[in-house]
Image 1 (tube, rainbow, N blue to C red):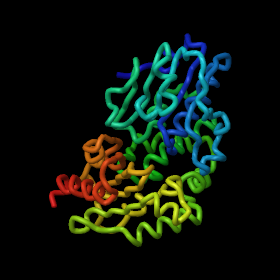
Image 2 (cartoon, rainbow, N blue to C red):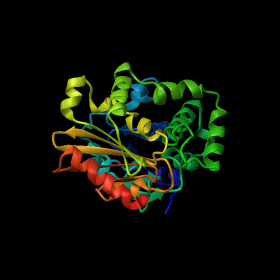
Image 3 (cartoon, rainbow, N blue to C red):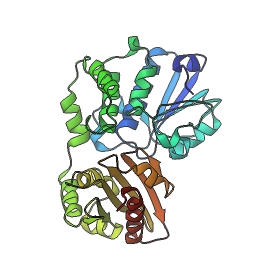
Image 4 (cartoon, rainbow, N blue to C red):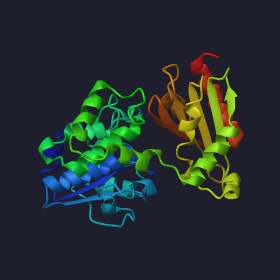
Length: 320
């Protein structure tokens, strides 16, 4: 397990990069940092990044205008890199992976510990894919823009260095990146903390109607498509809800379920203690992720039934 990034891309004329569907801060930061790094190392090569359209909060980060979001048909890449996920979660970019002459996978998810490519570099102990990618880079090519993107990726997946996946190594890397002299607080406010008025109203409503289970150790919130339409919101406005539920005193597991499309429900899971591994909870329903942050989907049941199933599975770990 593991490979030398520059060695494996040295002979390639074309290099493609992608991450997962609905790209979050670590995915966007990791992929863009990788794009800008490889373009700097190989100015003569064609290096392209394919991701779904990113959230508005990322509109001012370095290189965001370089992302290709229409997934056009093209000649097979000499090397295609999947970062922060496995190929099954790359959406429309999966075709590039399947057609590529060589495939590389860089990740940190325990659910993808064996990787999905010809060559894999997966470190489940790393806090973020951006942390893994930083460790694969020649520091002489890292500049301020790449540092911003890597730091954003690490900071997002650690909850601003708050989650338990933050290690001494994570903090040492962050310190090195901050030496490039960018506005960390401003970057985090814009990309992580700021919410629209509509989002804050939605969070307030979900919290107001949330429910406690298992002697207060589990909290749940739900949102149907019908209610989304009534409130004038979309699934893109749901960011931050599960984390707000998680910080309720006494809660060890937060569960937020929303209707992704008619009859299909997405659950976002967060843990506050080591008493529950939400990646195992998600895997029971075909999903995955991290020990403290995971997700899964379900159809064929109602939103309330899915919520109850999740609580029942959580109870097995919490011994309540």
